[in-house]
Length: 161
Image 1 (cartoon, one colour):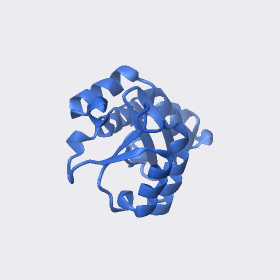
Image 2 (cartoon, rainbow, N blue to C red):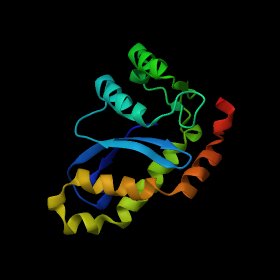
Image 3 (spheres, rainbow, N blue to C red):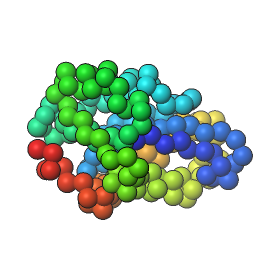
Image 4 (cartoon, rainbow, N blue to C red):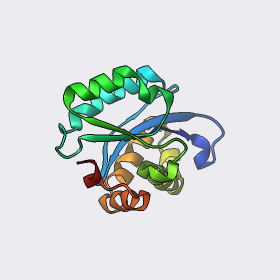
């Protein structure tokens, strides 16, 4: 799980961006949220609360959250919320995007956005957030890619059982 901003310039525009928070599993995106503004502890806590509805209780499937080291990821409140529902938190080592499978997802997502930018330009009335949600849905449903991203990052889910 990680956050990323998507700038409209990715499609060769000059203004606008939207942060996105997806939760990524070996079979694709489990849950995501596109929003305005920056990501902070409050936004992340709300995201976690919604995400946990899609998680299993340890050691069930989707019961481990692998998170990078953004300071607000380490809040005691996040740890409490996850522990209460039986979800295990695993923090990646500092400065290790190569160990985070979602980084490859973000790369694939940005390439998809570039290739499909005209779709947004033809229907700007639907909004950039809706366009991003569609992109995440399409790219996030590619189970084969997700499995490869986890394998490439060296993340073996069974290691956490």
